[in-house]
Image (cartoon, rainbow, N blue to C red):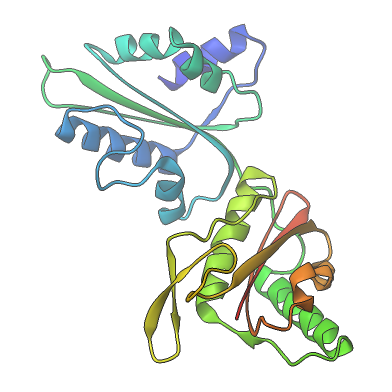
Length: 253
């Protein structure tokens, strides 16, 4: 299958994809899941989408595509992908560099389930670990809060966790994006869980977010919501890739 994919790409003047053993193992396991459920779907009931599967496996990526098919033979399944404009576009996505292929079949007479994972890995991180950059963001926020004469912000581990996830997502997509906090729960006070709205809702916490893509973590001091004295708690998430830091700063009252 890898040879078939690379032959197709060569016909369109594209560089071949490097076969990845970890990606192929993930693809094989997902094909086995589809076989067991007798269905072809990018998200099976109780199973995460490809992005989360990669994250759980510790595979960092910048761009990912997934092709799924079933057929009487592996080649028939592959041909169905090439006949589909959307799947063909994935196979001919120029920036991709790695490929994982996995199949599953119950018997010689049964259908083949095929999974292809195509991706470009995350770029090397900038000098300095994200944790170091996170410390620099916190220090920049502290200095700016002091300059404004407002009380110090309190670090919130749950906000940190959400911010870290959002920073990683921005790094992978290579774009800033608004943070949707609807449906997330945050513990406050003596352990009660409170819904996190995106903004102020009566009886709920006020939670807001600022995001940055920058080469300097200290740029987070420009965070507009730092001026809102109602906000007492802060969470910081930092990811590095693509030549810059991706930063998410969450505030709550």
